[in-house]
Amino acid sequence: MKSEYDVIIIGAGPAGSIAAKTAAQKGLSVLMIEKRQEIGDPVRCAEGVSKIWLRKHIEPDHRWICADVKGSRIYAPDGTMIEMAEEIAGGEVGYVLERKIFDRALAYESAKAGAEVMVKTRATDLIMENGFVKGVKVMHLGETYDIKAKIVIGADGVESKVGRWAGIDTSIKPVDIETCAQYLMSGTGIDQNYCYFYIGNEVAPAGYVWIFPKGNDLANVGIGILGSKSGEKKAIYYLDEFVKKNYPNARILEMDVGGVPVCGSIEKTIVNGLMLIGDAARQSDPITGGGIINAMEAGKIAGEVAYNAISKGDVSTRALKEYEDKWRTTIGYDIDNSLIVKNTFTSFTDKEINSLAHSLEGVNFSSMSLLDLLYALFKANKKLLWDLRGLFKNVVKYELDFER
Amino acid sequence: MVTINVNKFKCGYCGACVGVCPVGALELVETWIEVNETCTSCGICAKICPVGAIEVKK
Ligand SMILES: Cc1cc2nc3c(=O)[nH]c(=O)nc-3n(C[C@H](O)[C@H](O)[C@H](O)COP(=O)(O)OP(=O)(O)OC[C@H]3O[C@@H](n4cnc5c(N)ncnc54)[C@H](O)[C@@H]3O)c2cc1C
Ligand code: SF4
Ligand code: SF4
Image (cartoon, chains in turn brown, red):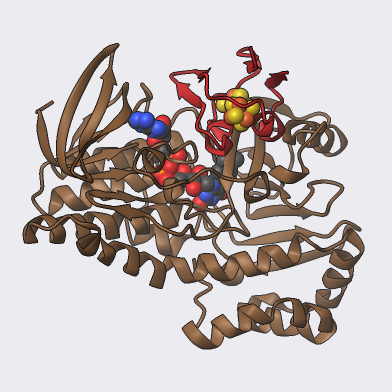
């Protein structure tokens, strides 16, 4: 560890590692700190990721790919099933990862590119001078250190403190977080070619149950419910009910819990000398809760912008606005659109969800685009068209990209 | 004292409670949650904890 770097990145998740790799490849001196002793563990994820988008950042490797899925099966509350082929099912199908290995592989990539990585090193505060972030206070194995940097990147995930230290209020309201629990299970008997989703307020209030294949006879069986719907009955309670009912004889090999921000874009992700990326910037998708790809995309943009700003000798918010503008015009559009859809769907009753599902029964999804799907939905449900009118304004304005 | 009680035997150290605390009173250190004196006992963290590990002491 040196006393000064060009860039310090706090958090070694997908966001932090891609930012570190990008900045290091550009020739900057980079330190990435991670407070855990093992990168990627414990897992807080269902581990589904889109193939196309993943390949933009890393070559797929059999060591961290557990399953290669062909599509999704979505179940309405009354059991009506809709099957979607991979190309249109959205961000949650494609590969199912082993994140413990995946996250470490990404960190390794950043190390290979020249970034220093320190584990068991927790940021405890920022160093501020004349309204600029100038470095990070860290604790490593019980000792405290001040480390200076031209730019600090906060990639510290759902629990992010970095933004708050810099004066950006990133606290999430209960209505803006999915509270989740998951078991890795053996013996569910699911078809390993599909991801399964169960929706409805009885199984998962304002959220969904997911079952993602993990190879052999393994699967991630998990649930997310909206924080505002969590009360006496917590996420784990709903999960236990689902498992007891559907897989009474399957075995639990691992338990994961976590929160996913579903608030949509926050107002500000930069201050002088600082950028927030990934879950720390609340960049996960409000409908699916998927955040790995967005985190990596934001990490890449932030790494590039860090280089541009440092090269010009200007790390003020004015220079870092390049990051803010770039993420908002790319992943930001999708996040904003998803928020509109999420707000509509979370207000639906189980009866309304059933009726939507019925209107899609028998439709051939293997040859449809997502816009065709929306069209089929709207034809049968005029109210939905009205509820989602904001989305159409955005479609016209920005040309929606449903690939992620 | 007004504060919260985290059952460390139930907690899965996921940090969700840290993200929702409006006053930033919580921190996930290694595998345990620490709470500081700024806690207002609002109960939001207890509401969203996926496993019900948090109890608010009034
Ligand atoms: C149950 C669940 C299921 C999910 N399923 C999916 C899915 O199927 N597909 C998908 O794409 N996304 C999914 N997500 C979301 C996804 O996990 C996140 O969006 C993604 O991990 C965000 O990456 P990140 O790098 O921003 O943050 P993280 O991966 O959370 O990494 C942040 C890192 O920062 C570290 N850190 C925090 N504070 C400090 C500090 N002070 N000092 C040093 N280090 C610190 C943390 O220890 C952590 O390692 C799911 C989330 C949950 C909770
Ligand atoms: S939300 Fe619950 S399980 Fe997660 S860290 Fe907080 S107390 Fe532990
Ligand atoms: S009770 Fe409220 S203020 Fe206290 S730690 Fe929990 S969320 Fe924060």
